Image (cartoon, rainbow, N blue to C red; front, side, top):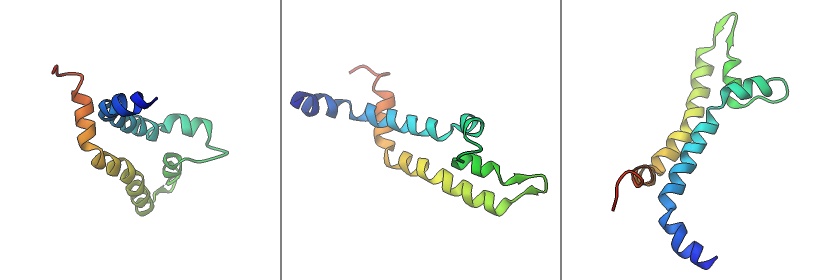
Length: 96
C-alpha cells in the first residue's frame, strides 16, 4: 500500500484528475435519463430548468439565472484542473 501511494498515485495523478473531470461533465449532462426516470419524485437541475418552458412561453430571467448556476461548477473545476487535464489527455499520445 505504501508503494502504491508513494509511487503509482503520483505518476497517475494527471490521468486521475482528467478522468474525474470528464466523468463529472458526463454525469452533469445526464438530462435524458433524469427527465424520464425521476420527473415525478425528484427533479435534478436540468429537469428543473426544463420546467421554465411552458405553454405561455419561456421565463428568460429565471432560465438565464439557473443556467448560469448550472454552468459554473464544471467551468470552475475545469479551470482549476486545466493543467492536469491537458497533461492527462496528452500523456498517452506522446512517447517519452
